[in-house]
Length: 157
Image 1: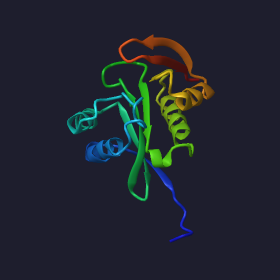
Image 2: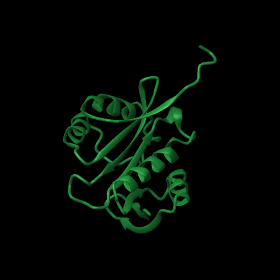
Image 3: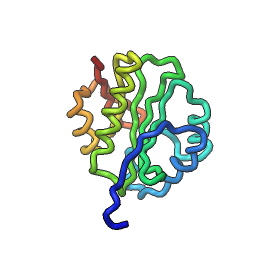
Image 4: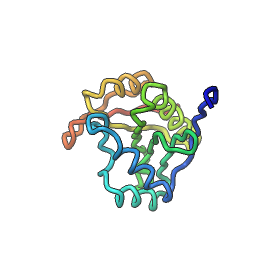
């Protein structure tokens, strides 16, 4: 239908979504996901973290039942009090506000669960991401020499 509206749903991801996540990232041009270093792009790795997640959060963006992006809050299962945020949005759906929506959703989750701070890492050449994170009040707190990423934190009130 030509006039049918598209609706974005945010749903918790689980074991059954490993193929969707793997295929979403794998289908992207290498230049597009060059800064996405949250995990090794192997099906077994994706399946592993989804299977083991208890407190860690993996949230998906869906349109018409298809996964178009996701975000993660990781480290809680490992005992960290400050989760690490990461996001991946399909190139087809970039620049429509989904990354911003993921940050707002993640901050809401943290507030609801009394998590006082959020951390993320971003490559210094990923200008769009830097602009988004700074607009939400994330401040640069360090540098990760293992991958050249800047480390950012945000206090959650």
